[in-house]
Length: 329
Image (cartoon, rainbow, N blue to C red; front, side, top):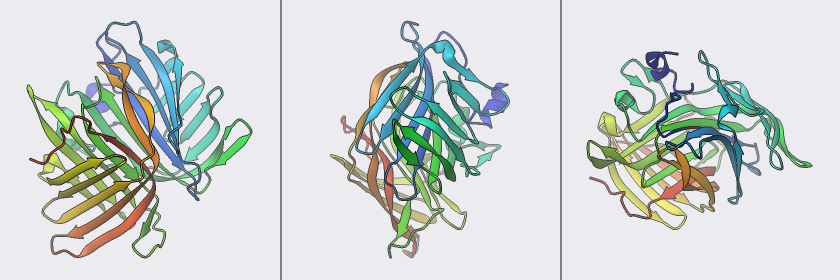
C-alpha cells in the first residue's frame, strides 16, 4: 500500500516496519443494549526503538476499571495491505467484526453493522484534517466509526456477554507516543433531555497538548453525530474555539464553539482502570480510562437555540491533565 493510499484509508495499518520507535493501536468499544457490560478491546503493535520490548498486544477494559493486557510476539501481528484487516495471534479484527481468543479473559465473535466514519476528503483525510499531511507528528488519530450496530457475544469463562442489538464505536492512534496531557470522551448511548432513547446520536471529543515546531499548542477535535445523519464538527484546524476546559477527579467540563454552533460537555462518574500507553514507541506510559462515565451534552446554534441536549451513558472517558497543561488560548 502506498503512502498516498494510506492517507485516505485511516483504518488500515499505517506504520512502517522501521527500526524507529513507533506504535499503532485500534480501539473497539462494544456496548450491549442495556448498558450492563460495556467492553473496549484494543489490539496493537509497539516498536521500541531499542528493540528490546517490541511486541504486539491486545488490551481489554471493562466497566469499573478492570483492565487486562495480553502480550504477543512482534511477529504475531499481521495485516492486509489493500483493506483493513489485522490479526494479533489468533485474534482477528476488520470492518465486519472481531474474533477474540484471549486466555483467561474474553473469547467469541461480534459482528458490526455498517460503519459511520468521520468523512475523508481530498484535503482533509479524516478527523485530523490537514494535520494528517504533516510528517512526524507525535500522534495521529482516526475515527473509523462513530456508530454502528452489533451482533454476537463474547464469553468470560462461563459468563456470556451478549452484544446483539447494541452499539459500537471504533477509532485508532498511531505515531511515537500519546500527548503529555489530554481529555477524551465518547458515547453513542444517548437519551435526550426528556429521557427518551436516541439511537444514532454519537459524540467523540478530545483536547490535547500538541508538540509543534519546537513549541506546543492545545488542540481540540469534537464531533456530534445527530440521528438525522448530520455531523456537527469542532476542530482547531477549521478555526473553532476552545472556550473552556476544566478537569477534576473523575470529572471535566469542555466548551468549544464555531461560527454556527456551541458545544458544552460535562463529564462525571469516571471510575478508571489503567491501560498501557505508548512513549517513544514502547508501551511504558499509562492512560486512565473509564467505560461507565456519564457525559452531558448541550449543542446549540449561534442564536442559542438547542440542537440537542442529552445524557450519554457508558461513556468512554480519559482525563489525563495532572500537569495542568490544558488551557484555552
